[in-house]
Image (cartoon, rainbow, N blue to C red; front, side, top):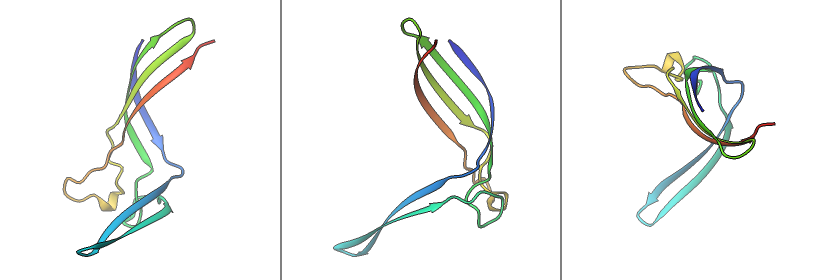
Length: 105
């Protein structure tokens, strides 16, 4: 089985876990971990734009009676940086690879 087509997405919620390591002198460093919500919008203080647009690709195979194995790839084409952060050629786009095992009944 082969498939593909466009996708349109709108982010409603998200969170991030950020790890940092800082070297304080020659023999020591400090590690920090922060969890926070992601802010969606188009202002300088926002993390990402909520809208995304891209293409989906799918290759699938029926293994035995009813069992399916799919490989999916989604490639964003929209810049998801907030509009007020877009300078020069800086872009952020989404991409995802998925492996799915399913049963058709």
